[in-house]
Amino acid sequence: MEIFLKAETWLALLTLTFFEVVLGIDNIIFISIVSNRLPADLRARTRNLGLLLAMGVRILLLLTITWVMKFTEPLFHVPHWISEDGSISGRDLILIFGGMFLIAKSTREINHQTEGEEEDLDGGNQKKKVNVTGVITQIILLDIIFSFDSILTAVGLTNHVSIMIIAVVLSIGIMIIFSGKISDFIHKHPSMEVLALGFLILIGFMIFLEGLDKDIPKGYIYFAVVFSMSIEMINIRVRNKRKQAKEEAHE
Image 1: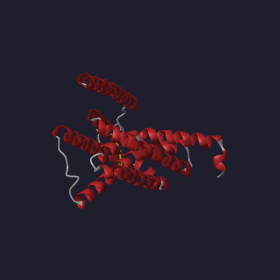
Image 2: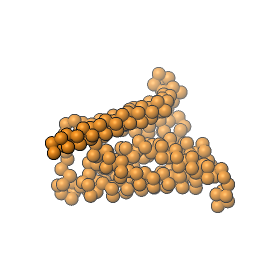
Image 3: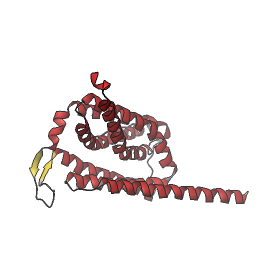
Image 4: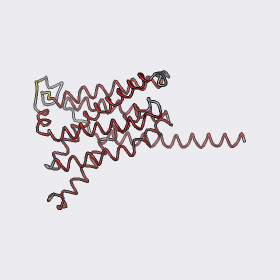
């Protein structure tokens, strides 16, 4: 407990929590989109359960930090035109397959939007159970993919696992608080959902390239995300004002 009497401990905790939330933004958007395919009465419970289980997995990874760090060791070598350093590690494989998963899932969700495919979510209890299980599994898998970057960042900031765990708990709590509002907003505005899915494809491609040790400046991508979503927010406001003006004119 003596470490919590030091100012650098609290600074490390605040910094880690901030990084966990920032790195979890992509996760929140993905969770919001996949949970919106569930019946309304199951969405919040499924999101929260998925995030809590993901938190448990992330804490487990932190408790086995020595084992996790071994994932950065090369497993085999490849030509330099495939990977910058000519080797592929366990972390690289997770990022490569994770990026491919995110691209495939986001593309499928866009197809659902464009083709107007709707699953029978009001069918039997078995159908709902399968959907909930599938959504929770996807939340956990994606959280594991994003966990490696956050764990490596945490190791670089502090050597105390207890601080890392507290930062994870705080960040998951923040995600639980805001995921519902983000989910409702995305569900209410389909154009924002399509835009978010497009950027998830871009982020999936970035994760895939990162697995091949390609240096992609993340700042440019996140700036593009924020800028495009800001423009879409303005478009939504303009459409709402025009709709309101038409309704007032008819009255």
